[in-house]
Length: 416
Image (cartoon, rainbow, N blue to C red):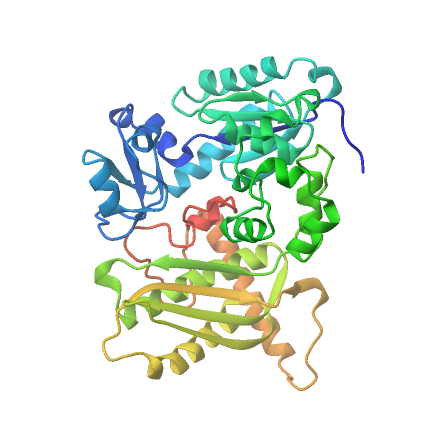
C-alpha cells in the first residue's frame, strides 16, 4: 500500500451549513443564535442544526428544543428550507470547482479534492483562494473549514481539528504529532460503541492505537475496516471500495395535529411515490416494501410486503394499501402516530428483470409502467406534481420527501 510523502488530499466541511445559509439569505439572522427546526411552530422536536453563535451558548445539533431554549433563551428558531440548501450546495460546488476539481461529494456540506502536484507546495494559499472565492461570489456568512493531509481520512481529521473556519495543514513530515492530542472518536469511523470496544482492549489514547498492529485492529472490528482504520492514521493512501445501493426510502415526523391514522396513511402514500420516483430515475426495481410507524410513548409497528421486482406507482401503492390493512388491527384505539417511514428494498436493475413464471402479469405490469412513465413525463414538463395516482395531500411544513439530508443531495424534482 502506497504511503504518500506529500500532501495529496483536501477535505472541506462547511461550518453550520444550514444555519449559515439561512444567515446569508436573511440579514436579520446574522450575528444571532439560530436553530433550524423541522417545521414552523415546532416545540417538542429537536434543533436540526444551529449557528456558530448558538453553539457558543451551548446549543448542539440534534438537541431538544426545550433544552436549546434553556441554554440560549434568545435563540431564533427557523423552519428548514431544504430546497434553499440544495441550491446553495450546487452553487458552492460550482465555485469550488472553479478553483480545484471536486473529487467526491461526501454529503451536502462535505467534499474532498485531490491536490495536483503543482499545488502541493502551498496548500495554505489554495485554502485561502477557495475561501475567498466563496466569500466574494456567494457570501461571507457561509464559511468552511479545510484540512490538508496525505490521505482523505487524515484530511478530514485535520478539517475537524481546525473548525470553525480553519485552514489546517498536516504534512506527512509532521505526523503523528498532530494526532496525539485527539480522542479516539476523532478518527472517522470510530463511534461511541467502537471506542468502548477499544477501551476494553486496553486502547485508550491515540498513541496506543497508533502502536497497535493492523491485524489486531482487524480482529477488534471483526472485519477489514479495522485494518483500514489503522493504515489511514499512519498516512497510507487507503481507498475505500464504493458502496452499493441498498434501498430507497423516506421518513417524516408528523405535526401534532396530523398524527392520526388517516393523515399518516396519506403522508405514507406521498413518501412512497417520491421514493419510487427516485428509484425509477436511477434504474432500479424493488422486491420488497416496508412500512414503519413510531407511536407516541416509544411504541412502534413495522411490517413488510413482497413485490414482484417492480417500480411503477400502481404496484407500490397497492402493496402499501395491503400493509395498512395488516397494520391497522395492531394499532391501539385512537393511535397517535408521531413518525412514519417507507422503504423500498431488495433492489435489482430494471434492465435485468426476470419475470416470475408463477406470476403471469407481464402485460399488466408493462401497462402500469407505461402509465407511470407518462405521469413522470408530465410532472417533469411542468416542474411539479401535476398528475398522481390517487390523492396527493402533502403534510404541513412542506418538503415531504425532499427534507434535509446529510448523505443524499436532493434534486429539484424531489420537492415536487
